[in-house]
Length: 304
Image (cartoon, rainbow, N blue to C red; front, side):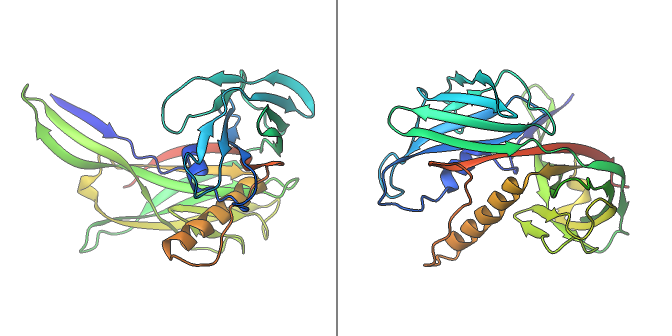
């Protein structure tokens, strides 16, 4: 019998990373609250509330489970979010809503805690882009036998908004294959993401940050747009569990885009040991962190 074990490698932005990568602008100032939430209409809203000390001090991040988190929809109070007790890394200080955000609605939070005072933030739940059609075109096999293909996606941009997008691509790669004591064949695999290379002009806001591609709709606002991307990876095709490829198009708010842009700049600055300070964008009043929305649409197709 053949059994498959999937080792999941998260390559999408996580909120635990938000806290770790966030830069405190004024290290000499008093402690401030850190509020992080990337929310979508595809699930309940999670808000992570922690306290921050000076970046070079001990115990820089700690959970604020006694905080009061009030959630508003279009300026109308909806509920006090419930604290979710968990010791899992990346879920410290987690508060959760009882409902999914609604497309096109504006959401705001008011977070109050006795030591840190009150922090405020707001963002509008984005409306997803319309995907008209999509397909993957394979390239002829070359001497390297690399995984190589072209993705073509046609979208219709919403003319009423300034829209931003994030695109990611991944497949399932076989790591190893062993036979266990019971005689079963065990296939160990992981989700592996690929770097995208645009083959048509997108916009002057197009950026490759990590393995993800970000861009805005300036230049095609309210129009149909054909998106074409090449991707190539040193993974041989025979290492793929199947010929299926997944890609995700996220419609993201401008706040999400600004946050991602400055987060990547911060990471690049850290990697080069630059003496120039780099700060991550925050829209939290009287605090640090990010409160931003997105909508994700995932499609799968076959590499022929």
